[in-house]
Image (tube, rainbow, N blue to C red; front, side, top):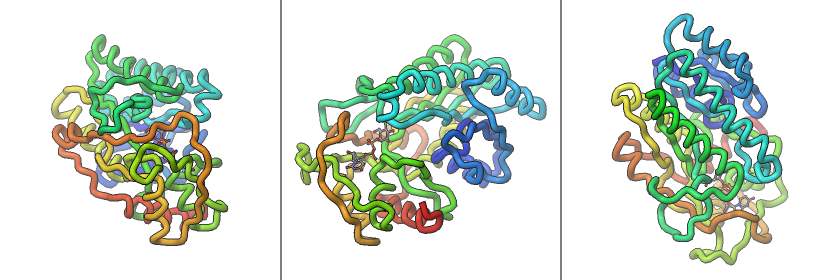
Length: 327
Ligand code: UFG
């Protein structure tokens, strides 16, 4: 299949691009390199330095690409995704995540592209009261502009699907982490906020210590519980979802997680097994729910998708990536 990937130089996008190329697909990447890494784009993918929020720029890419053969699927990763930043810059989040998507959808309609795989997030669920696995039917009540912009984007896709007959796979990621097997790709940021890279960086001496945001939560060990999903497992789900859209010509909305929760202390212990991981307990971070675990049964039933890599693989791959990239 021929796939146009927006945000294909970013963390999850670059893993999916590499896997698409390895599986023999024809791949073009659009990225503005605001946070992605050009060197993370597989050399066999065609690369366009372009911004999804600029209609003329993006339309040119679609015209060039459809000139040779029709695009079967757009995978739309390009987005802003820092929760704390979104609280400070809500307009920028809606501009990138909703207006950027609107322009992608308009280009798809003009070019006759019928299928979109969309990166969404568990942040659309907000702060659920019940500490039970979240199924796709649970209410979506985002508590920050990031989650809210992603929910609005999901809705826009669903409206355009109804009006223009496109098929979508909306994929709600839980806590993406880890690096690919070759350790050539991984999460790089000028300022890290996620637990796994921060814990690994503390173990490597790149941070003084990882902070535990509160140890008096209503959880067995007092620290927050999340569902950590390996980025290569996420990538596998994207390929399956795209194939589903092409063969079934039906839409999908799926959680992508492992259905297993790990506490902050368990993540630190997993890193500590590889290298001593210094930590300190500090106060709670605003907006953190105590527990977020996916009910991932639908992705299993519909796509046959089953995550293969556990927390130990996640932290080991992140560590190996950072040893290699020194970041
Ligand atoms: N945490 C710490 N110390 C840190 C960083 C995080 O204790 O230095 C804790 C947090 O309190 C939380 C857990 O580790 O309990 C995971 O935090 P992350 O920042 O790694 O991830 P979040 O669960 O906050 O957010 C992630 C994505 C969001 C997405 C959300 C959906 O980053 O984009 O999952 O569940 F919206």
